[in-house]
Image 1 (cartoon, one colour):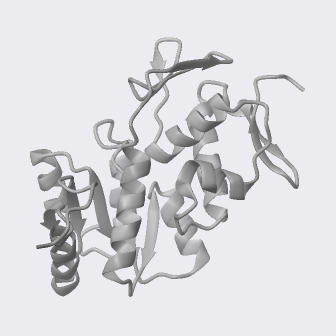
Image 2 (cartoon, helix red, strand yellow):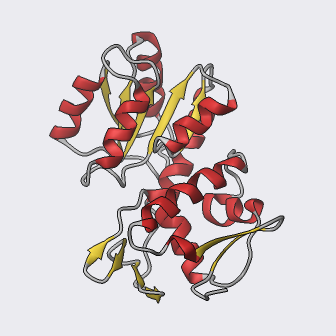
Length: 237
């Protein structure tokens, strides 16, 4: 009998037009205890999402009707889907492609060919980060209010639209203000020390966090300390 993983029973949507790859991925995930739904293009993916919101989306970059990157961007703009993590599957291994995927809203990036064990490890790591038990805590700073129980960030009555990674990053910053953290420290504290993520990833999510805060004039709180890293501070220098 296959051993059930503690992250099992969550639904994963696999969007992949190459049937052998899709079936291989789906088979491995089902063996690990996940509820898997398959789609061969973005049109079918949207229909699946309309039936039930998945807990995570695996999407191939190259799809017949729309690129996986375009689908990811669209999902991150959808208020009902923006907090659902997305992992991109692609044969594109160049750094600029990885950055494009992350800037497009992907929470992780897996390059083909990949092993089923690596993919499962990435999925479990992303789900742990995205579905970590929220503490009943409210933190306020500079007009920003982070409600851990409600899993949202407010400025006055307005909700700041944040993806799951940006939310965790801001949550860490707001609960550890004024201290400078290197990219490596942020990877360890926010992503987890056992996750295979490049330090460049931190810069991508910092830019996305600042962009989300910019409309509320709060992007200045996320400060770059040249040669050292980043800090969160509401002090005016």
